[in-house]
Structure formats: C-alpha cells, structure tokens
Image (tube, rainbow, N blue to C red; front, side):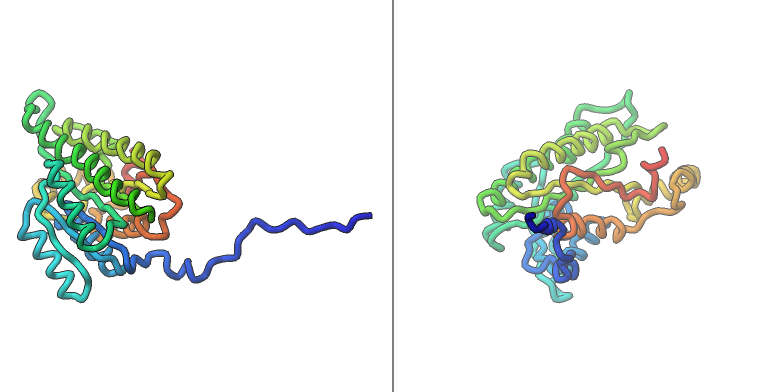
Amino acid sequence: MSESVDAVSLTPEVDIARLGNLFDLTGKTAFVPGGYGAIGAAICWGLALHGARVAVAGPNEDRSYALAKAIRTAGHEAVSYCLDARQVPEIRETVDHVVEAFGGIDILVNCVGIQREENLLEVTEETFDEMYETNLKSAMFLGQAVAKHQIARGAGGRHLHLLSVRSQLALRGRGYSAYCSTKGGLLMLLKQHAMELAPHGITVNGVAPTFIQSDRIRPHLDRPEFRDFILERNPLGRIGDPVEVAGPIISLVSDAGSYMTGQIVYVDGGVTASQ
C-alpha cells in the first residue's frame, strides 16, 4: 500500500514585510497634471509624504511652482511644469521632461478637469468642445504618453484618473450635459486603457468624488437651498474633505492597489450607493 502524501499548500505565508510597506512610495516618481487645486494639492502632499517624487503640472505656472516649492521646503522632492493638457504636443513634451529628469514615471495621477454649467438648450459648441478637450481628450493622451515610456521601461506602473459621481449620475435641474458626458466617457476610457495596459503590468483606475470642500464649490454652498439639497441626499450628511479623496488614491497607486485595475472608487459619502 502506497503511503499518503500531503498535498502542497497553495496558501502562501503572510508576507509581513510587504504588509508593513503597502503604502510606501519611496523611489517612485508621480506625475500629477492639474495637481494644484484643492484635491490635487492634497494628492501631491500625500504622495510626497509617502515617499514619492512629485512632478506637478498645470496651465497656471505660479500655482504649480508654489506647490512644488512648499513640498520641497518640507523636505520632499517636487518639481513643477507649465502644461496646457488640451495641447497634445505639450503633453508629450512635458512627459518627456519628467522622464528625463527622474528616469521614468511610475505613477500618473490625472487631476485635469473643468466644469462649465449650461442648460441643455443653451449649450454652445465652444463650451462643449472646451470641456471635451479638457476632461476627456487630455486623459487619452496623458495616458498614452506615460504608457509609452512605462512599456519601454518594462517596470509596470499605475494610472489614476480623477472622475466624479457625475460619471454615473445625472443631476436634476442643472446644466450638466457636457460635464456628465465627458466624465462618463472618461470612465469607459480608463476601463479600456486598463485592458490594453494590463499585459504590461500597468494598472488603470479612477476615483470619483462628489462635492468636496474647496473654493470651487463655494457658490453652491452659499445658496442655502442647494446646500441643503446636497447634504440631505448624502447619507453621511456632510461635505467631504480633500484628504478623504487623497487616501483612496494613495492606496490605488501603491502596492496596496496592485491587484485592482479598471475600477472606479466612489468617494461620495454613500451618494451612489443610495441613488
């Protein structure tokens, strides 16, 4: 009679060292276009505090420079670039500069986006085109430019796009046609990018917040009826903080998010879970 042989376990031992470093970005380079707004600044600081070199870029050169300088003053690595992400040649040139400066780009966090509210019957071609170029076209070519370098380098990478709950939900009584359609398009763009880049070890995900504390939403909050509407439909009953958006992003671009791709994380106090 043959002796029984115990099957070799497929369950790995818990990697304690890896668990302890899930959010460590030391040695990584993060490119953050549009990264000096309320949410973008929190993201850049979060990336830097977890060890990443941060390259922040945007059309307002002074704001981009001021944020990078503040991060450097605090003892972290950061540089700034002037970039109009509606211009594809500028995207490619800026990405090349970041790669030349740091030897590669490990992380893309795309914070580029605008909103121009116009009711359906009043939407102009100029406004719609501007929002398409800013919110959707720029994401396509930012992802492409960074991916080309990452594929050539052969070390994988992370792409993260900032969306909105409006990528899934329309808004009654407001002129959001261009915004909702471009954010919805971005949702599907990042899913397709995720599928095409997965064989190269590059993950692509999105974080979609609702209204977050910033000067941008002050006009909404200054209107009591709309502020009450926002708070009433939010299960947590409050406006989110930019840090609460940065947290999930850090998770997705670090080792903690290594097995997630093509996904959208809604940071919205439960709005999309209940509407």
